[in-house]
Image (cartoon, rainbow, N blue to C red; front, top):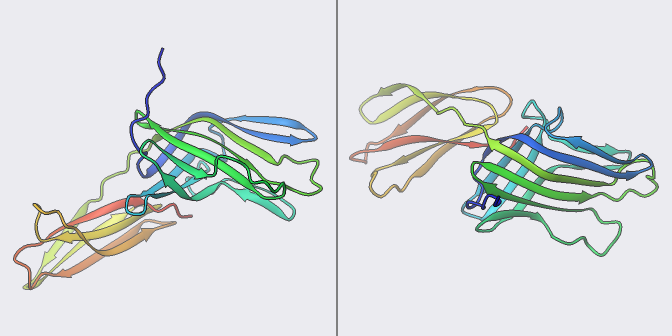
Length: 229
């Protein structure tokens, strides 16, 4: 048997965790192993910005909104990572090696793509002075998450007068919706007109755009995970 090869950079989207484990260590109780998915870790929100080559990743509960975190008096750690560096075959969050100072928090997570799934491995160390009874080392191992297909955006009504076009669409939560236009489908130079965020509830959007000085104009709505809560 041969391992599945990575197939490029993971794409933005909401991913459902199918397997893996989360380990907590090393308080008085020793090591605790949690098979995934569970109630607090059911989904992964991933957003990759192709312009900056940076990424964001968040571990989400089964409600797809609550961000997974651990806490204790005076501190804690939230499993929401920013400024991930995008490489040709993976994304790296954090640095590979712990910092020299023993009291500094540290994390390192690697996200790769195999077939239509994410593969995530990483660890976080959260120092806590005087906390001998709680875990301070956390690790995700062999987490596999598959992309949740997003429903398409449907423009359900269109109105036109002499110099403008008005159309309506609805958006489901946890996505950003960007209305874009272009004057040529050959050049595909899409211009962003406005962005709308559906955070907690569905949204109704009515967009009006003038095309008085354009011989033709085409519109589309781009849908992306907002990684919001």
